[in-house]
Length: 352
Image 1 (tube, helix red, strand yellow):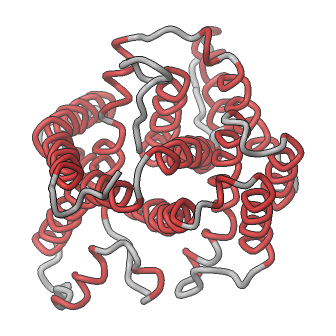
Image 2 (tube, rainbow, N blue to C red; image 1 turned 180 degrees about the horizontal axis):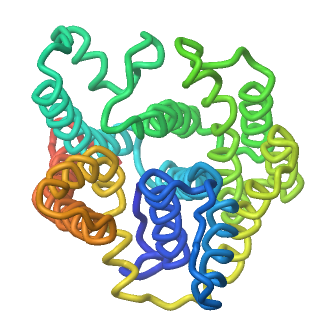
């Protein structure tokens, strides 16, 4: 979700952008094309049968889209670690708020309105419930998920942002020992602690399952910045994968991240992939519920599943581009402007 400037110049770290594009495609395929479930081709055409085998193998690898989720968390851990080292606590908080919340709140309200439109008997939440929901701390209050359910990953990220902000405020990154101790303790705590959240069977313990991968991404950056011993990075990765019993999908995704990370200095900037990566946050928030709406409306026009899928995907992409350009980016710029104003304000400047 987050983006970062490249080391020493204005281009992005492209290895993260390629991974980001892979992650959102993996999640989209699962949500709308049933990743992990087999399709059957009745035709005897050899090419179609080969395509069926390849597709089913890939979908099994992307089991429930969790491959993409793991990559997203590894990316966020890496980027947030980098941002926390170069931004003040207030700047870090302001930028995260303006990047995450405006588009999320808008999508949450639109999703709520559409759900009520199609199900008028469904009661509307109270203002208090909406306010709690909008904070993304709903797991602490048992608040249902919105925007097609994908909100759960943002709830984990918000807790991680608080963790990273406190870590930076305390100056833990100035000491290898302190940083190592905190990252190891946080990873162990997430693994052995009480299952959270536990307010419904569908959300039981997802924080414990995925938070360690944010720690892996964070440890990778701090190792790269020479603030963390490689032994700690390896220990955090082993603990995160060990919780999944080293299941192949999780191991493959961490391995893919490490390979791309190792080769990052040799991966050149690509405008197309950078542009696609720039819409991943808005696409992530919009795709699950908007795709279904377009599919439903297209069923009035055609019975062709392929045509409905193509049109629905194109509509979601178009809306994601618009949301990125007219909502996400303007609020990011507003947040950056506020940070610059704060830095330049005579009342807020500190003495040299």
